[in-house]
Amino acid sequence: MIFPKEIWIIVIVSLLLCSMGFKRFVWFMSVGYGVSAAGIGLTLLIMSLIKGNVSLVYLLMCITFIVYGVRLGGFLFIRELKNEKYRAKAAEAGSEVNVPIFVSIIMWIYCGFFYVFQSSGPVYRLLNNLNNETSLFLIIGTVISIMGVSIEALADKQKSDAKKINSDMPAMDGLYKLCRCPNYFGEMMFWTGAFISGIGAYQGAQWIIAIIGYAEIMIIMISGGKRVETRHIKHYGDKPEYNKWANTTPLLFPFIPMYHMTSPEKIAKEEAAKKEKAAKKKNAQ
Image: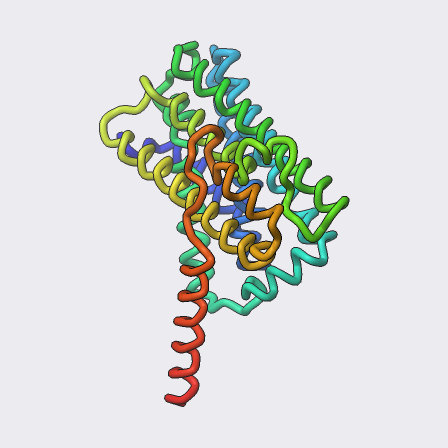
């Protein structure tokens, strides 16, 4: 069954926790994202303990979800509270603009379900009563997820430390010597592990839900890498040390020579097109 009855408990938890987006729209996709992941992990942990006869590796995967979500949600929340430059950038990007309530409701429902889809591996392993098995895929997935959480946490710390030393340049040392977005790479590793952990547990159309959730978070992360590069080019594109780093350090995946997803020329064309569109709209009024 693609939606077993118990899955609605997890969906409700996800919806409740990401509902903080009604306070600030961007929280649907930031703080609410992390808190929902933690809530899903905690719910799976409690449900598995109630069922009994659960494997230690499955419990470890649930705990990894909780750690991932609490750390990420807390990091994002504290950053918004303490980082004035981040708040200024967010306001400039329009994150503080009032959003119509019907748009917020649609985003809330979408995020609530999407976060459960992303978590399909451990979710379906529990709901299909396979949480008591210690399969090879569960072990591999759990190890990859733990590595992903560790890489993301370390990358965020190194970035914060680098910004304290020189706020006018991006972080370029530590994990940032391996790729320019190691925090995104760590997050992709975490969700890859979650997906792999469910192999052997997915049944029939449940594969569709799992693949949709996994594919979408990968697309989001890759497009996020492009946005980071665009922002970096705008802020640091005139600095030789940045260009040397950007031209020799992969964007998202260590040791894979994919260096750029955009360029100054493309960005200039996009900006010109936006200005032209805005001018036409203004004249039409």
